[in-house]
Amino acid sequence: MNRVMALLWRATYLRYLAASAAALGVDFSLFLALQASGMPIALLSALSYSAGIVMHWLISSRLVFAGELRDVGIDRARQQALFLLSAFAGLLITVAIVSLAVQFGLDARLAKLIAIAASFQATYLLRAKIVFA
Figure (cartoon, rainbow, N blue to C red):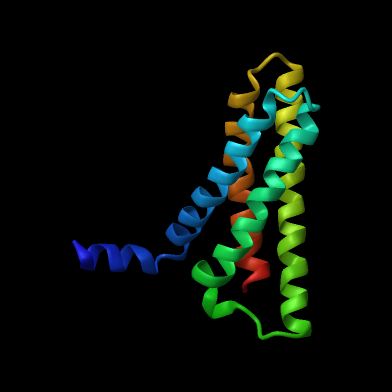
């Protein structure tokens, strides 16, 4: 069993999935906690997503793509900037899907789940192919 777990852990996509699950925990928990606040749904979605992004950088840069993390300095700053740009792309996807889906009558929680799936795939590709390449 330990050997299987070790092999699975070596798969970058699976580590990214685990990092995303942790970030999602932060994101979705905050989304649900603040939903009763009466805050506009787009702002609420953006705030909760942003909190998840902070968690994702910490995990991605240290566990998922640790071998590709740049040294401190201009290269690290560039990598962080690209990470933030990829997060912004994910944020735009999330806000657009949640806002449109709610506008068309879909429950906000279901809309958020759909947005999570779309954002996950888009940000993984950006980070694997550009940010940590």
